[in-house]
Image (cartoon, rainbow, N blue to C red; front, side, top):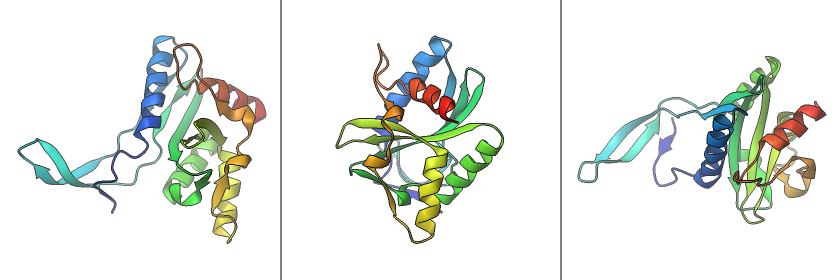
Length: 176
């Protein structure tokens, strides 16, 4: 069972950008995408501050986001890295299984990956992720290098949306 402690809220910068985009997409009638909460059970409380000091995850989460983009069901996870690669260890088996099952039901699964050091963000299609995942399980490369991220899936700001990922989703749909 996983525990939440000092490493909690990792990836919150990227999630903040996605949440802002999702709010604007909803207001503009472009998409309905929501952050899925991860159920936690508090173990230790700080009664003076009214905060949780230690908690554990009650169940494994699936992905960070799920919704519908103009009739297309989508699910995706947000990943940040300080390196010039995305470690496969940042992706969990239960997430891969969920995204695979989602794809088999004609949904669109992907990652949104922020390379903090390079200040660039990409959509990573599930098929590409799965090929690296499968290779890593067979003693292959244990990370996805920055150079493997296709520039056609790079995510840019547009207007008042700092992370306009719907453009990359549209590109992904054209490449299926």
